[in-house]
Length: 204
Image (cartoon, rainbow, N blue to C red; front, side, top):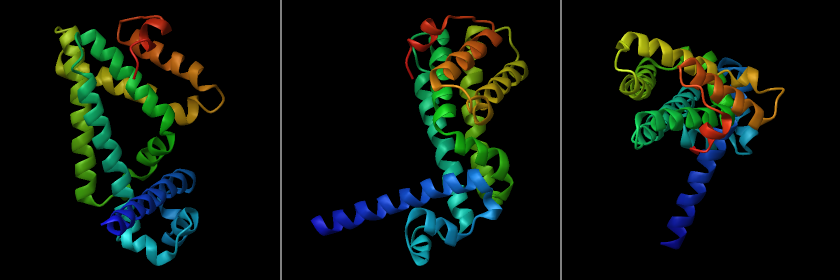
């Protein structure tokens, strides 16, 4: 049993090594410029080992984008259950800002390589991302019921564009400065200006 557990743990660790390698290389070079051999070398494994975990480069790309979309939806949904809608909004903004600062490579991959997903995988990612958007829209319309769903969606999509600017906006600034700027701008643009201390004291 211990040997089985050890093998399972090693397999999971090797899979994560490949995922991290893919995230770095796809972000740096673009999906089409990366081969399975490149991924193996970056992860420090043999070529055949890659295929034991992923049938293709496309499957690895799908794993990256589906997984992050699921995590955003699950974590966002939890934060939307705060004591008040305005508290939920603050938590959502802090959460997404943390994601955008931490996982800039995934934002680059989504921007550049979404079109390389297989059709069914692209539909899955789109469905998850629409559901995540809906979480935000619901919270915003709780705060301001006069907003139509269309207007609320436009506002939240603009906020995503702002927060997901980190591959560019965070390159020459320290993390906390960037966090303060992005969070403050997000709340201000939605009509709820707050100080950095008020916003980030909610945690992420």
